[in-house]
Image (tube, rainbow, N blue to C red; front, side, top):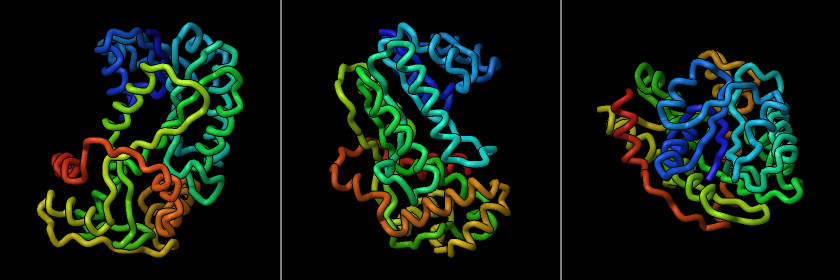
Length: 291
């Protein structure tokens, strides 16, 4: 089969490409950087270099594919993050329709059932709605949970302040997932036939934030590590001081409020998903190796 993969060689796209190539498929990888050509070709894939803002380029890259995998890459330079994500999704939708692709696996997010109040996820809600309007195209929206690797953002806090935290409490739940588990789920879906518009949640573990602190702390030799709840104002100021643009920081604070209330997970729990392989303690070992 022929697949076109967006996301260059990112945390999900690279292992996805490896799985598809090893299964004997022809894989084209879209990247904005010509510097990635050699690495893409070394994986046994074909490089398509261009901008996801260029609908004609996307259309050409999608044409002839049995299925495409779409993801909207983050941009810290976006002045309106929701508009940026929605615009990227609109480009994909136009290229999908123009290219004649009949099957799409789209990277969305847990919480994308909500139209507002979820920070960076709001744009992915909009993308789902755009794709659901595509006529004659089967779409599988993958809704992964909170990425384990986001916890790397707390490394300096753990090292220098001896704490870990966010604007939600130690009793809050985190629905967690590893990019490797996401890639495995996408590979499974894209290689099989499906119809209509549907959703698949992808998660590896569900734990309280206090348990996250204990697991990471134990792994890095700080078993006393505690989870600390910040106010929204403290969280915003901390992220801005750490170098995040204000627009991005505001979005992450808003996502934190959705985690704090639990609303982000409601549809996930209602759908009773099957959990994947990589548990918190497994990731904690990985975290320690990079600490």
